[in-house]
Image 1: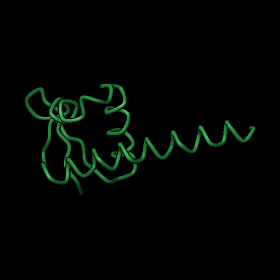
Image 2 (image 1 turned 180 degrees about the vertical axis):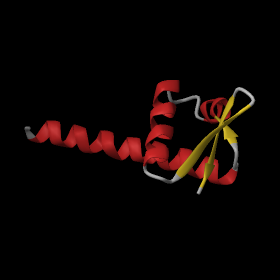
Image 3 (image 1 turned 90 degrees about the horizontal axis):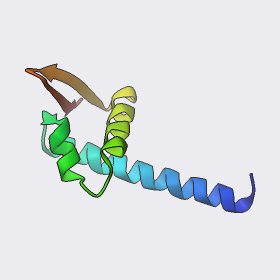
Image 4 (image 1 turned 120 degrees about the vertical axis):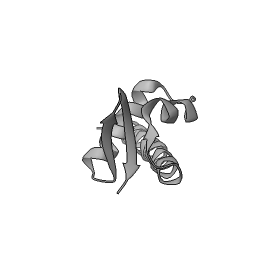
Length: 77
């Protein structure tokens, strides 16, 4: 991997973690947030990006995902 590729990769990782941190903080401020509310709050990001970040936060054990009445909700642990 050349220097430019390393810098690009680092910048992407920082941006992704920043987005993930913003999503986490939103869920922290608004517990039991629905997926569509989170996507609406971060309309600058694509739906796919928000869902990927939510999956990563869940996998990392920082948020809990649960379903009720055809809705998917997230809350911090």
